[in-house]
Image (cartoon, rainbow, N blue to C red; front, side, top):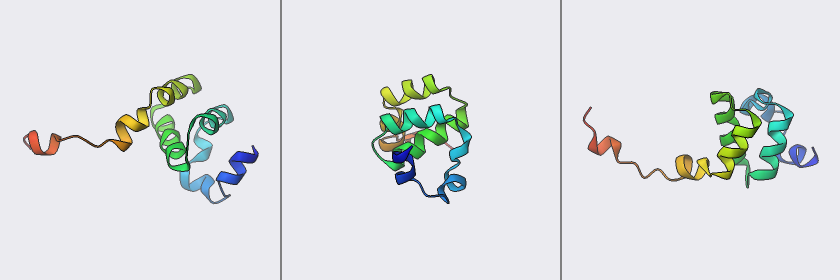
Length: 82
């Protein structure tokens, strides 16, 4: 809880939708993410997709963030017709 309080301010609760998941989700995010940006990205994906805590952990362990958010090596706009 101390780590959570150090990372987020009271204003962040609404801004990032921190109430969209359970504390159990937050504990996994605190343990398994490396920075605030990654934490928020996984949090938003969990809320958007209705992930359980176990699915969230699975996605973190298999680096969904690294595969989708960080590496934008897609050439769909250039290759696919409109």
